[in-house]
Length: 571
Image 1 (cartoon, rainbow, N blue to C red):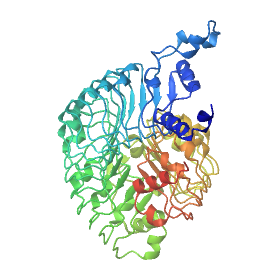
Image 2: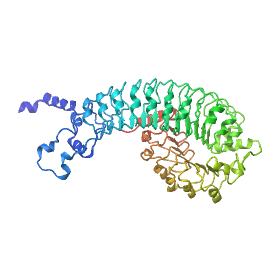
Image 3: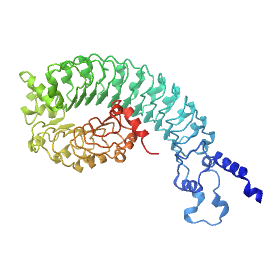
C-alpha cells in the first residue's frame, strides 16, 4: 500500500497514458447518440478517439449496467451521428474508421495538422459539408470525388498543387473554396461542376483559366484574385448567373471583355491595365461597381457613359490627368474615388469635397447639346430636367428623383412607374427623413435602392419586403437594425455617415454580403469578430477615428485586414 501511495513515477506514468489516449466525456457521447451531433472543437486532440468512430456501433455503458430504462434513455433508439465537428485541434491523422460513421452529413476538420486523408472518406455517401481548411494537405484522395451529395467543400490554406482530375463528378457541389493553396492549373473536369454558385480560387499560382468555366452557368461569385493571370477567356461571358468577379492582384493589361448579362461587380484593382477600351466597356451592361484602383490608366474615355447602371467607380492610384465632363451624366453614380491621380484642371478643394460636388462641377462643364429622342421618350436626361423620365422607367427600369433637396417624393413619379418592373431607385441628395413607403409597390423586382445624402432618421421594416433587394445605399447615425434582418443583401454602402458601432454577430447572418463600406464614420472600435464575416470581399473602414487596426493594416486591403481581425479574437 505504501509503495502505491508514494509511487510518484507510477502516478505520473498513469497520467501520461491518460493524455496519450484522448477520451471524450461520456456525457457528450450520450448526448450525441440522441441529437446526432458531436462538437469536439478546440479540445487539444491529436487524434480522433476510437469511441467516437464507434459511437453508433458499440453498446452504451448504461445498457450493460441497467435493466430498466426511461423513455429518454432508450439507447436502442439512438440517432446516427450526422454532424461531427473536430476543428481547431492538433489532429495529424484521420483513420479509415471514419467509414464507421456513414450517416455523417457534416464533417468539420478545419484548423488541424492533417497532411493526408484516408480513401475511406469516399464511403461517407451522405456527406454534404466537408471543411478541410487550414491544414497541411498536399493532395486529396480520388475517392473523395465520389461524394455525390457533397454541397460545400472548403480547402483554403493548405498546400495543394492540384485538384483531382475526377473533381467534376461532384455534380451537386454549390460552394468550393480552394483559396490560399499552390494551384497552378484547374482540372479539365472543372466545368462539370454545374451546380456551383460560389467559387474562391484566390491566392494561388494560376496562370490561366480553362474555357470549361463557361459551363458553370449557376456561379454567382468567382474570386480569382492574387494569381498570375494575364488574360481572361471571353467564354466566361457565358456564365449567365455571374454577378461578382474578383480579379485583383493579377497581371492583366486590359479590362476583360465580358458581356456577362448579370455581372454587377467587377474588381480588377492592382493589375497592369493601361487603357479602357470601348469594346470592353460596352459589354458591362449591368455593372454597378467597377474597381480599377492601382493600375496604369491614363485616360477615362467618353464611352464611360455607356455604364448607365454604375453606382461606384474606383479609379484610385492611376495616371489620370483629366476627367470627361460626360462622367456627370451617369444617372446612378454616387461614389467616385480618384485619390492618387495627377489630375489637372480641377481645383483640389473641389476634389476634397467628395463625389457630389465633383459631379456637380463636371455637370457645369457639359456642353449644351440638342436632346436626342426615340419615339418621344427622353434618351438622356438629368434629374433637374424632367419630373417623370419615361425612357428611364421603361428602358432602364430606373426610377430616379435625385439632387432635388425634396422632403418627399412626388406621387406622380410612382404613378408614372405603376405596373413597371422597376429594378433601380435613386432618390439620393434630397431631404427625406424616412424611406418612401410606396417602394413596396416594386417588391418583386427592385434590387437596388440609393437613398444616400438624405436626412433619414429611421429605416422602415418594409425594406424587408423587397425580396430582390441586393444593394442599398443609405446615410445614418447608427447601423439600421433592419439591414441586419435583410438577409439577401450583397452590398451595403454606409460611407460618410456617423455610424459609431457595428454588431459582427448579426452581420454574420448576412451570408451573401460581399461589400461593406463604412468609410468616414465615427467608429471608435472595430470588433475583431468582424473578421469572421467570411463572405466579405470588400471591407472599407478608412476615415474612422479608431486606433486599432493601424492605418497601415487597413491600407493593405480587405484580406489582410480580415486576417488581422481574426488574429485579435480572444481564445
